[in-house]
Amino acid sequence: MKLRGKTVRKNDLPVKTCAACGRPFTWRKKWERVWEEVKYCSDACRKNKSYAQSKT
Image 1: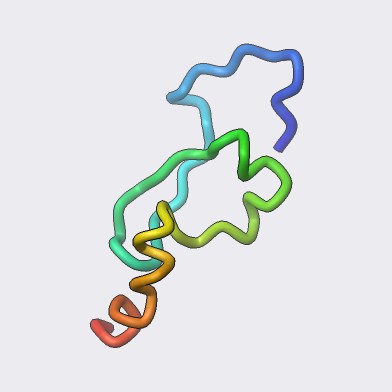
Image 2: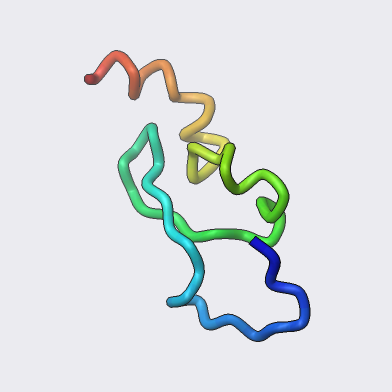
C-alpha cells in the first residue's frame, strides 16, 4: 500500500486482527513494505504467539 504524497484519514487505513490477542490493529508506516506479512499487533503479542496457538 503506497500512501506517498496523500493525506489519508485514520478511518481509511487498512485493519487486521491480531493472531494472538484478537484485537483489531491498523496499518502503520513502518509496516508499509511488509503489511501482507504482519500478523501481530505488538512485540508482546508476537512473543506470546505460542500461548495464543494453544488456546485454540
